Image (tube, rainbow, N blue to C red):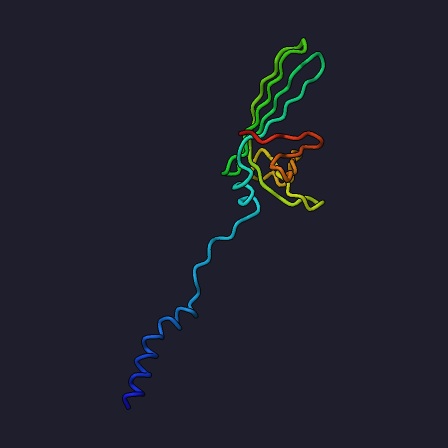
Length: 137
């Protein structure tokens, strides 16, 4: 009888662990591709080119972790008035037809097919057509 009581006591003491194994555990929230990209791609990128008559154009885009962006352009010299402009909007990451990860920039959240896209290069820079936007420090 003592053996049965000891076995029953062991079963009761072990029961919470057995029940815990069957209870569903809280799962972390799923991440979207854009959320993953925001963790690694957030920051500033710069593209500088020299045009006719020595005109220097500097363009920058800042991808923010909240999936918004700001972009700036400044151009000076070259015998024409200087240009300075500012813009912004939202961005998201997606998989391009060739399998590459690309960043799509639009003016609002409803812009599901924006014209401005940049592919993510292995070195952390962005490719816009044939222009390489270098990651800032």
